[in-house]
Length: 152
Image (cartoon, rainbow, N blue to C red; front, top):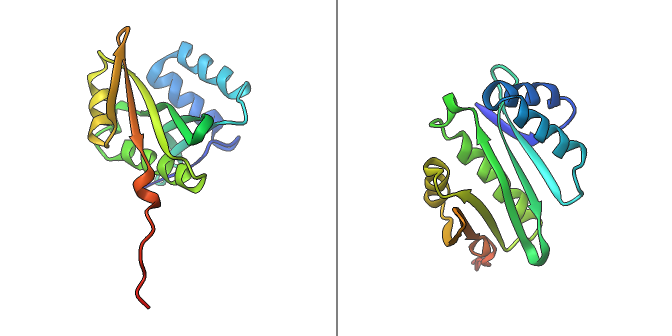
């Protein structure tokens, strides 16, 4: 079992250790800098393994203008990628987006990142364009706002 929550100081050291162990010291420094310089519209969520209480993945998003959310990054440690953890993180992103009345999500993925592109497409993201080796994806959240008629 896992849970997805805000990245707080409680999980920060273990989160940064997870990044360094799996992605290297340069990635750790880049994320650490990003967290220190985080803007109000940016949000990090962390996925915690409830058995170990350790981070196993995360997402970073940026709220854009006009009700659009940019999925800057979504990551799960390689050994746990086929256990639906990425989908669980993405659902947490959707839930927060809908609670903030977000109309849609955009994401970028290098076109040579077959796993990342397949992940986005299998979760309903649509390829908008490819430019300079980067695929640009979109996903509407408008279907989540359709009112339902209640019979009393």
